[in-house]
Length: 142
Image (cartoon, rainbow, N blue to C red):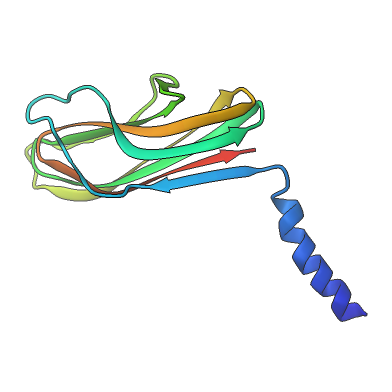
């Protein structure tokens, strides 16, 4: 009987710990070379998209890109909610005349959303010889 109780608790705990939460995640399907040689251009969709039904309230948006940069290159990223940049927040990484480098650029921020189905996308801008080789977007609805 005690073994059955332990088994039931082990099964029930993970279910109750995540009760009421929705999570969506998407990954970059192919690497992205920078289309802008000079100054950074307008933001473009990366192809990373999560459609998720949310409750009214806060969602946590977390995103990351693995990027390889040559001297004088830069990379920016930002989330959008239903096709619109949620605010002016973005993450960026630029290098000057130093040697090229490989790094991971990450972003996380909470946003207020209404109840219903939303589409979350990850956009990027860049300049120079930079390539995003991997990336992901995760949305956590409280």
